[in-house]
Length: 295
Image 1 (cartoon, rainbow, N blue to C red):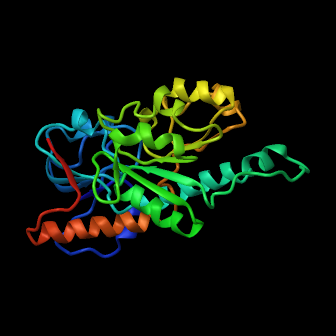
Image 2: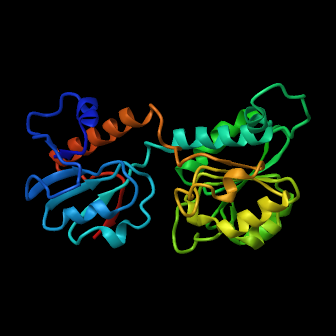
Image 3: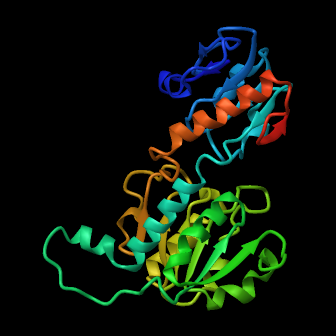
């Protein structure tokens, strides 16, 4: 098997003597033509996957949860697994951090860089919070919202018991003061958060995006942010990163973090745990977990 960096190799600890550990960061050709388990580096984009061409693998293991763009970049003949179970909790943490900072004026206090008069800010308690996306990230966010005494509205692609469908959004958005976006990026979710979506929200609402930048229309966000009608807390943007000097950085009703949702100390041990599980499954002839693509 190959790992992209020594930190992950160290975190894996002792593995089976049947495993030969190679270093391959996918910035150049593979060290072998046959690699049973290739762990992909934690870097943006999918261009590095081209180096898998001509390499025989049993499993390509990503360190990301999202896999948008992978289908078009992965050479034929590979099985690709995402990192489900690794990033959900950390992403939920940053969603709540951004939301609380936006609701309780933390950004204003920091930007003041000096004494500031106390002011009234909206609570999180008693707000109607719409969580858009009911995968692992959405569920992790909801678990952390529970102690805050919110009125929770769940939305997924299709309706089911206790969960509204995306088609119901026009009727739901006018009554929601907080929207947290955690859907995967697919053809159906590109610009899901558009001008019409935002226009349906009440004045003063806050939109938190921890999904992918392209799920939201940047021009629509900018228009609402300029007007001051809505507030935004964005861990992801389109383009990403935003160009230096972009207007969104300067608006007082916008908080931006640099797509850091999964980047916490929880990541490395959880990736190592997932990779060890995949090793055990491959050694015993089992089916790997988290498979999302077969090219």
